[in-house]
Amino acid sequence: MLKIILMGALQSSANISANLLTHFPLTRIWGAGTGNNTINSAGIARSDSRNKKPAGKVWLVGAGPGDPELVSVKALRVIRSADVLVYDRLVCPELIAESPRDAIRIDVGKRPGHHPVPQGRIEEILCAHAAQGRTVVRLKGGDPFIFGRGGEEMLSIKSAGIAVEIIPGITAAAACAATSGFPLTHRDIADKVTLVTAHYKDERDRTDWRALASDGSGTLVFYMGLSSANSIQQQLIKNGLDPQTPAALVENGSTAVQRTVYCSLNTLSETVIEKQLISPCLIVVGKVVALAGSTGETLQQSQLLNKKRINYSI
Image 1 (cartoon, rainbow, N blue to C red):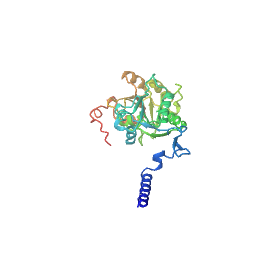
Image 2: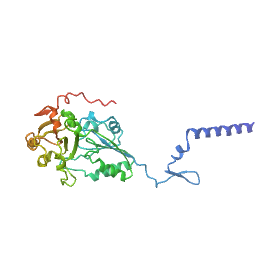
Image 3: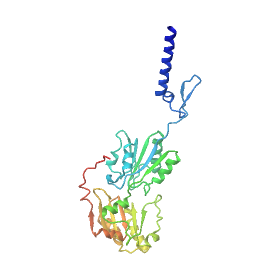
Image 4: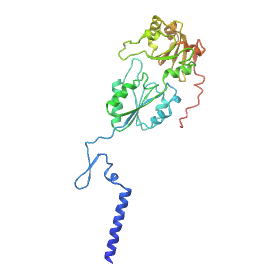
């Protein structure tokens, strides 16, 4: 009788052990087989301090031109999953508020003549947080790869051995033209668009003005060009572009305070002064501007100011 009881106990023990292994695999007891732990001769898990925590990931995300409703669905999803949000000056507060409440939010915005966080430091911040295993979202106005230094940041992150993914955004050229009522291209008027930066890293002008002015069948869009309006005007006319070419200056594009001022190329610089335009302001030069059907100043507020409060339920 005793023998039967002992055999039954042994069998029950074996069944329990089998069930434990089924529901609690060894990786749950000793850690996943990633090399983070080793087993000593006694069969006891021992931490291997030489192995580092897996790196996180950096997302370079385009926030669009200013209107928060123009952000992509994918960008919004990633913002909401951020452990760390690193954002620029022109990113609207509504999008920043979409990041988790416990997310680390870091303002690295630049203003004309005032760059409190140098570009190299921004790249260090991105890599340092990702190296701690965090999901880092670098939120940039417009599109990260169009005058947004996204290429520089991508290369820096990759060189650190950290995963990086880019989410494009609507760039200012497309948004400002659309909200001002003229296209960037038209089959009968403009067959090309040229995006030009008015600022260089070393402040040396390397613009090929002759190439820009030689063909009146295209549209020229100058980013960050407000302080260079006089130079843009003089160089284009000097190199052969018709002084009467229509031009538009779009201040705070796609926002509730957008202002679009129309003029001709030969009055560009004086219009900036007369209308007291402020940054951010995009300059568009080309025949397509005339399709807006306006020769004066237009405030794009009637529609934007009457918008219902943004609903982010996606």
